[in-house]
Image 1 (tube, one colour):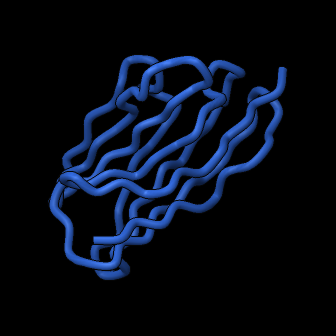
Image 2 (cartoon, helix red, strand yellow):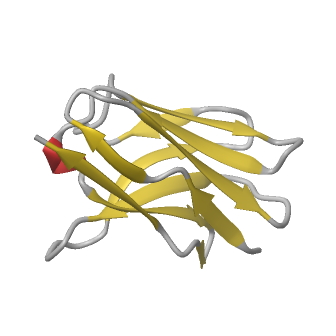
Image 3 (tube, one colour):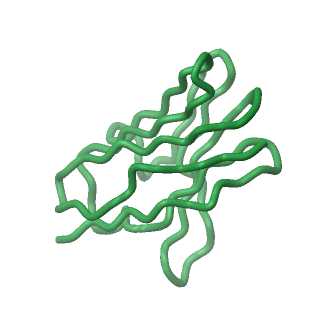
Length: 107
């Protein structure tokens, strides 16, 4: 399975971004992770094939994960962004990872 993320960019604090991840094949549970400079990669959100979702406490209430199974695409709607959300965001399913997309939130 190949995963290709898009939608990252530079945004001011309080702003919004929507990330997308296009998959080349069928997937079950899909997740978003992120890695800030000098830090370990951390879990952000997860969604099952049937739409059940789980979030990290740090993003709960601000981020929404969703998927379009027909389009084989995963999304992450990020609202009320904070400077501490700055990181490279990665799409993941099973042992497969995308190349990442940079999100930078300025204060």
